[in-house]
Image (tube, rainbow, N blue to C red; front, side, top):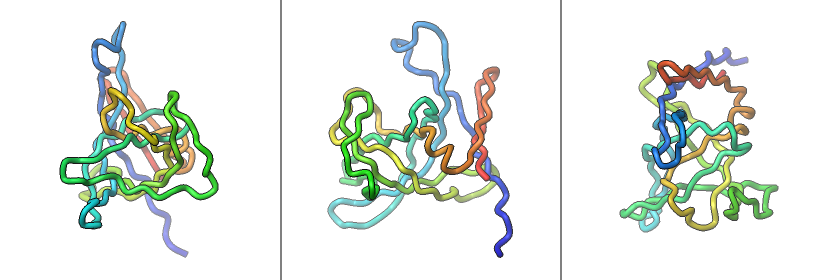
Amino acid sequence: MSPATPPTTTLLHAWPPPPEACPFPTVGYHFMGRIFCVHQDHRTFTSRNFTILLSTGDPYSVVLPYESEERLSIYAEDETGCEDTHYWWGVPCRFVRVRIGLPVLEQPFPRPFTLRALLPLRDVEDALPFVRLGGNFLYDNHARVELESVPPRGRLVIP
């Protein structure tokens, strides 16, 4: 039997929405994580820094489409058993699994996770490429979220 892994902590930072989207002050929480990517021309794999926005109001995580100038895109595997088209804010999506790495407080390397997420089947207008970390990720990983409003910061604690 292997020893129990101690919980890890990822720091969450304040993310103020754009002023035109806020009739009054508010804040969201995000962090920079890593996401597994593939180079389309060479079929080589790498990872890239990616903004991950805590989005507990979404029941599932959402990975917004991304392709860079060097033809690098997120590597996504189809989620078996979920072949129907699903919708996120009216945009058709499919369920996929992507590999992400979450930064861990006082550790040099990110902690790897497989993320079940919706991937839009077309571009989403006015949306920056980022991951919305939904409630299903927290549920699957028995995660605890601790948020403070003054100063705005938080912690994602995963056993």
